[in-house]
Length: 141
Image (cartoon, rainbow, N blue to C red):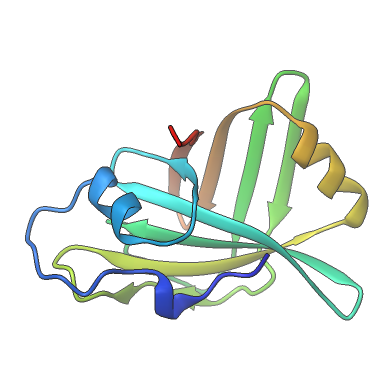
């Protein structure tokens, strides 16, 4: 279940961006939401290594050289993943004030099932000195 950057954002021009606008303009299902960002994700495997691919769309604008951590928290569950690459940065979109940040995280095969079965209460992205708190998104489809 990979993600495609070309399908991630609508090419409209607006100055006021909202979580609902981000979710409506992207073809993938949201995984988590914060006040001004939406987290999209998917699992991928390459050569026997597993990755939890994330794309953060919204106000997050960062240029990082020290990597990131992603922590999943739930009832009797906590899992922290480290980014696959230490260096990454956000990119502008055609929507004013909206950025796209791709971060892949290493995940062990044994942790995939636990994550899929967990009831998550929050997802925390630790990048630079920031902590972005996401709540698990449940679509109303």
